[in-house]
Amino acid sequence: MTYAQDRFAKVEIKTEKLTDNMYVLFGAGGNIGVLVGEDGVIMIDDQFAPLSEKISAAIAKISNQPIKYLLNTHWHGDHSGGNENFAKKGAMILAHQNVRKRMSEGMTRSPERVTPPAPEIALPVITFSDDLSLHLNGEDILAIHVHNAHTDGDAQMYFPKSNVLHTGDTYFKGRWPFIDIQSGGSIDGYIKAVNHALFLVDDETQIIPGHGSMSNRAELSAWRDVLATVRTRIKMAMSKGQSLADIKGSDVLKEWEDYGGGFINNETFIETVYKSLSGE
Ligand SMILES: [Zn+2]
Image (tube, rainbow, N blue to C red; front, side, top):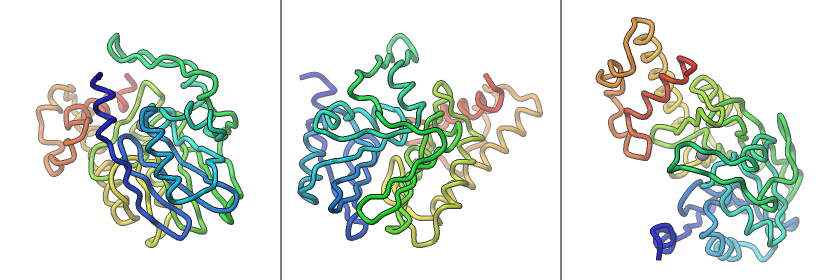
């Protein structure tokens, strides 16, 4: 058994009910949003391919309808890895146009980190540039593109009637976000995207972050303030002529040591913000 298989064999899919017809599924990878109803199941993101059977089983427990539409919040494999499996079962995949473009091209980040081009069946068949509305299960679903944030193909998925927002990876609750500069992401676009999410929601909105447990406006707002503060501090240090090494050695993130517990540690986050601000 390979490491990857073993890793997924132990993953359990946990379902949390949000409203009468909306659910969130936690497993490994990006959080999955699910809207059920007589028009069929609408799914937001699908984690990794080896989990597709477990995810299908979890969804079958909340609806006997087929998965009709699958929306990807962006192209990363921990959110779109199951596309091929769900498309084969008949799901129609929708996403921003850059999701299709990046998935079809693949990416070499380093010799050890190569994402091969996705097969045709895994690609979104309906793409959009700015936004898209879906009128299903009594809900007016809005998929809204935010520019150059986590990637260049992010969409925030808003369900106004249920008052639920799936932010995709424009929100990593309680930890530093991964800002994928190689995929067109940027710190300034990222903060704008968080502001956009804050503009959409109210105090009652249930927020599904890309990663982390369920959240709300107050938490997202506090997190935005952290990102904005860090951006300002790093910008200031750069304008004083400090190098990346100087800033990494400083106490610029001192209040948030615990934010570096995920796969983006404090040094990585400083480096990302520095590179994004210097346009490297
Ligand atoms: Zn991502």
